[in-house]
Length: 239
Ligand code: TMP
Ligand code: ASP
View: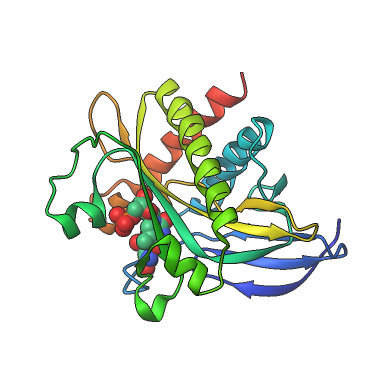
């Protein structure tokens, strides 16, 4: 597969065309951004670490019956992925209350709810990625009710698989964000990345944050912590 022209540059990734109409190359950058680009930095080797973590996790999901856009890792910072039409919303799955939900509802971070919480957010940075519900998504024409049922089923399955995977390496999966797309054959697939940039993960023993909150909240040792996550995930999945 030959990498061709740059199609799109995002905050943390570059997307290149290939000589196949059904494949793109996704390259992970070292850039870290938060709060809609207000906070910015380069974290040495983040591209490599996130590419490795996301490749390992997406391959694990593919192998466990969750269809994703991931085909294979091509080098240290790039993945070959299916071309997808991205659905313009994010699904956030929460096992432990933290972040915006803690702030918005005045709940202390760390509280464990009785049920798993699924949020839907419209991907629209100018509007601040607002929280929406199923009816909004259908009214906006971005998903059907039938697709939403499947999306929540897949999100719950991803949550179960990732919670178990992280638990096996001494990490609590607090919350995470996933995105979906439609592949060229019309199939609904999990798209985008699954990395410490897109989840909250806390060390099970020490409670130490091992995710992008280290960057958002100036907790230090961002790169070292991502390296530790990559190390634990690779060890668990390459046995
Ligand atoms: P939140 O607490 O800001 O709502 O975020 C919940 C989880 O979703 C957290 O793990 C970070 C992740 N997330 C993203 O990856 N991208 C986003 O744009 C947002 C809003 C959250
Ligand atoms: N939506 C957030 C941002 O603007 C993402 C995050 O903080 O992870 O960067």
